[in-house]
Each structure stands twice: as structure tokens, then as C-alpha cells.
Image 1 (cartoon, rainbow, N blue to C red):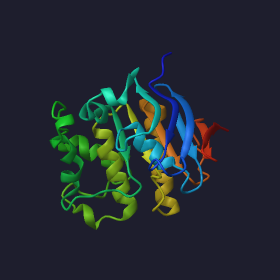
Image 2 (cartoon, rainbow, N blue to C red):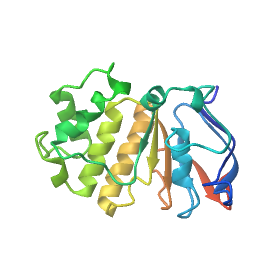
Image 3 (tube, rainbow, N blue to C red):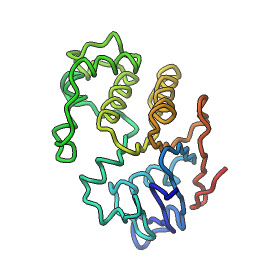
Image 4 (tube, helix red, strand yellow):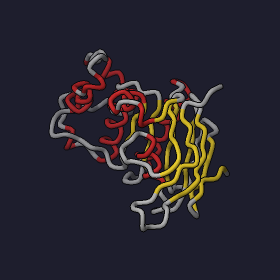
Length: 222
């Protein structure tokens, strides 16, 4: 099976005079994989994800998506298929419905059908948000609830790959467990490819991930 994403001898430095954050990183990610990338703060885990979806230019090596270099793929096309989620959920000043549907105004999603309210309410049930109306103001939600709304928003765009950057770093234990269960469900039941970076000792309960460690400028499988 050909790789969905390939990193070939990837290296990154913030500028030509600084030491590399990491160097000679090689990684193959196939469709349906679940990867956990661990490492201490400052080792470059978040940078690695941002390089994959072209949110940050890389320095050395190649990044391939479906056999094409990411530089050769128009950004809108790439981000329609590879979605990056930030550590803190970004909520706009509006209702839960407006936040869920906002990405459908992007050029990359204009060909996608906007989901009806019934579908959105069904997802709220699945994401342990059954008591939250669509007209509820998103900024009045707890951080844990906002993170689940952000996950819903990502899934509604139907990407092939989701890159999770410390998705539970700002959550309490109960909220973090809910988010982890949702992410595991996406991979196990919807066959979505998941790459998650974390400095926690989280280990999925329902699936067996490939676990990597980024340290001393190198990425190695544990």
C-alpha cells in the first residue's frame, strides 16, 4: 500500500544561523493510521505538523501527500484533505451553529454541501453536547465544550487526515477523556487518518497507535 503522507529527510531551522530544531526526519503514514508523536516542549512537535499542511515553510527534505510534494498542491486543495487543529479552540463571536458552518464559506469547501440542523444536532449528541442548543453563544461554552465544537467543525469538513496539536492541553481530566474517545472513534469507526502530538502519557484504550518520540532532533518509533 502506498503511503498517504511521506516525510523524507525532513529538517527545519528557524533561520540559517540557528541550530536545527530537528533533522533527517523520515516517516511514512498510510490511510487509516493513528500516530502519536510524543516529546518534551520545544522539540518541534507542533512545527512538524504545521510543515505537513504548509502552514510553515520547511527547510530541507521533502513532504509528499499522495505522491505529490506539498509545494505542488494548491493550499486550498491540500487543506481540504489535511486539516490542522490548534491547541486552543478558536471560536468566533456567534452561535454554535455559526461556528460549525463557518468553514463552508471558505473557497476550499464551497463545493461541499452545508449540513442541515438535524445533522448538527445529531453530532452534538455524539459529542456529549446534547444539552447545548445550536443557537447557544459559542463563547459562553466551557473550554472543554469549545474543543468538542472545534472537533465537530473539523469533521464536518470531511478531511482525509486530521493533525491534532495537543488537543487536550487546556482541558480537565474529564473533558480530555471525552475528546480522546471522540478521536479514537474517528479513527476506528470512520477510518480517518489521525496524527496527534502530545507531551502527555495518553495511550488510546480502543486502538493500538504507532507511537513516536521526537527528541535530540530525531524522530524514532517506540
